[in-house]
View 1 (cartoon, one colour):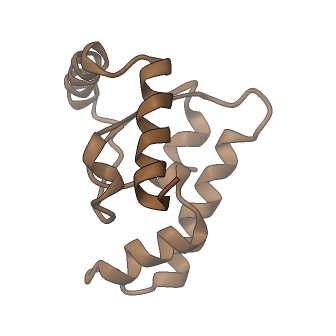
View 2 (cartoon, rainbow, N blue to C red):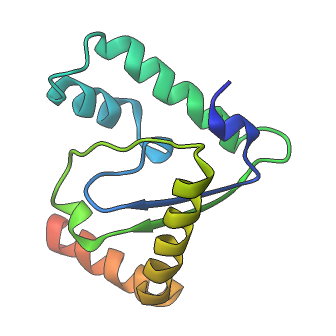
Length: 122
């Protein structure tokens, strides 16, 4: 059982890639293909996609994602899950500090719209 299956709240900060729980199959395949240490790309993609089921289960976890600006130009990075209480506490504190600096919901929408327009010329 994955940690997502047991979670009530999932908080993610990602600075370089789209978080695994939000990746499409094609994006995940690219990430795993470019990662030299991935021996079985298709198995890794299936596992990543199966983890997303936690987001659509009955009583799904609350998902909080904070994404760094440069993620939209830098496509590949890694991440990991931990259940170590000390590390969870340390990461929770860091996450709170990041949240204090994050854009508001309306500022994020404006930022994403402008980023999309700059990419698609719109």
